[in-house]
Amino acid sequence: MGELIEIKIDETVFKAQKLSGYRLLKVLGGDRDEADAYRDLILACVKEPQLSKEEVEEMDSPVFLKLGTELLKHHMGDLRGFRNFMNLSKK
Image 1 (cartoon, rainbow, N blue to C red):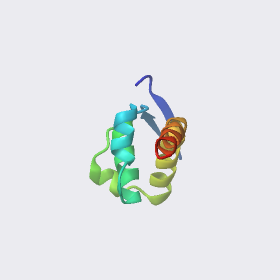
Image 2 (spheres, rainbow, N blue to C red; image 1 turned 45 degrees about the vertical axis):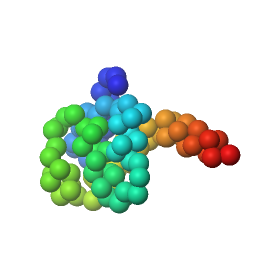
Image 3 (cartoon, rainbow, N blue to C red; image 1 turned 90 degrees about the vertical axis):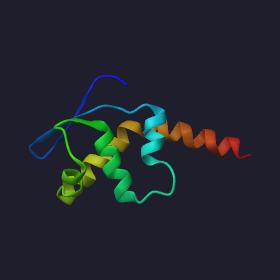
Image 4 (cartoon, rainbow, N blue to C red; image 1 turned 180 degrees about the horizontal axis):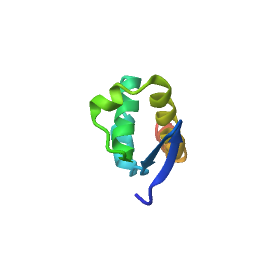
């Protein structure tokens, strides 16, 4: 884990941190409801402002979806590598 990245949505700036591979898979893995996975990704990554589970669940939908999408983009390379590894190990 490294420095904080800034994600600006409307007038709010969120400071977030990239997750370790283990934490990322724990947040997104398994048969998870997509809304719960986005909520948990936001809670795990966003350091400022500090958000509660209830605050994330009550976010306006454009903010919730944009923030979750931006966080996924920052982890996309790691997720692709993991997916490729899993596909190769099934052969």
